[in-house]
Length: 174
View 1 (cartoon, rainbow, N blue to C red):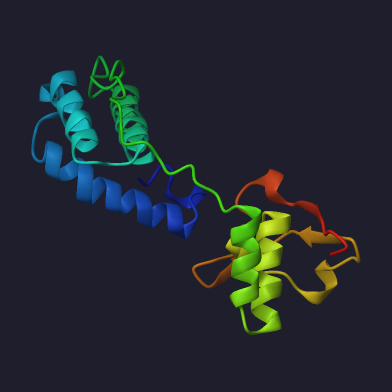
View 2 (tube, rainbow, N blue to C red):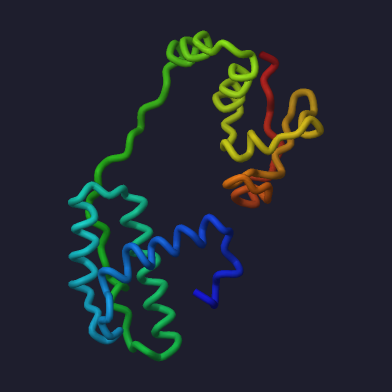
C-alpha cells in the first residue's frame, strides 16, 4: 500500500481499500504468507463466480492478489506466487443491450427540459463519460468540436480517466 498509494487517484485508493479489507483480508486473515495456497485462492475465485460476481470483479481479484503476492516475493517473504497460475472461471455474461434508434427518440421525446435533452444527446452522440460531460465549460465548445481535457470524479475536478481520453470530440450539426 505505501509503495503505490501516492500514484492512485482517490477513487482507486477507496476501491483497493475495499478490496483488501472486504475481500482479501477475510479470505486470508492471519494466515502466514507461506501457507497461502493456489487451491485456496482458486476456490475463492470459483465461489465469486458461482455467487454471480461480474467478470470485472473476478479479474480484479486475480490481478490484485497476484500483485500483492508478487510484492511479497520481491520483499523476499515468499519464494513462489500461489496466484501465478490461477484460472479465471466462467462468470455471468454482462449485459450487451443497447438502445435502438426508436428507444433513443422516445427517451428524448419524454424529456421536458431542453437542458436534459442536450445532456442525453451529448451522451448518445459524443460518447462522453459522465465526468467528462459535467466538467465541460463554455470555452471547451469550439463549434463542431468539444475539447475534453478534464473530468469530474466524486465532485472533484481533475484530469480525464486516461491520457487518451484527453481529446477533441466531433459534435454533429444536429
